[in-house]
Length: 281
Ligand code: MN
Ligand code: MN
Image 1 (spheres, rainbow, N blue to C red):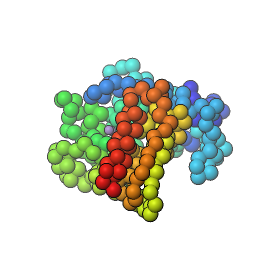
Image 2 (image 1 turned 30 degrees about the vertical axis):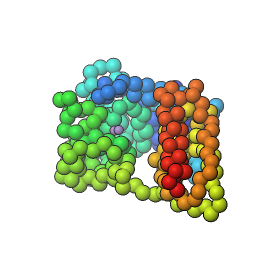
Image 3 (image 1 turned 135 degrees about the horizontal axis):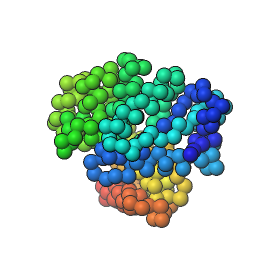
Image 4 (image 1 turned 135 degrees about the vertical axis):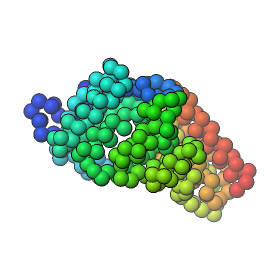
């Protein structure tokens, strides 16, 4: 299993845990590509204390200041209805102990059964939803439990008092109507304006190390350091800067770690945007 930077303790001897990790290797409600079922395993594998410590940036030592356990995976071998029931039951079990569940998915469909369990323990509940998509479809290809639908079900069932969606950028008019009807606050990417505005009075050279971007956007670098700039933020900085650009380098792209080619695509995007500013300062 895992150790989350050494923070996870064995369940035996720690019955009064405060935080419980729960894996849900389930991707049967994915509408396009399967693979999210590998999420829990991948997160556990990467979390090893051989690579990371249990300290947060704000100085919390998870190893010392809480009791964190890993309850393993929910059994997802049955049909989806059965799996959803088991997800709800597993989460309810954690909540019944007064502990906090950390659920590793899995596709987004699992949030519906998870929040069903929360309704019994924590009501009213507010939800902050980070996603490119509102996940508010009534159904997708006839499936009302698709990973494109969980927030429609959550709102219809009154499982959330308020929902704030952040990062949304794939919205249909039906989504908008649904969001309006249920009072969902949808913060779309196009509304998020936060460019750092730099001004240079001398000729400007830009050196762009690709690991400045968050590895979610640019995995093809040698040193994965989460918490970085999004590609959008980088582009905004370039677009907003004032100065006469006279040179650029793009460094540290590691194609061996760039399985999808997205990092190369991001590098090209940066080049393009800078070129545009060279052409039109
Ligand atoms: Mn989603
Ligand atoms: Mn999404």
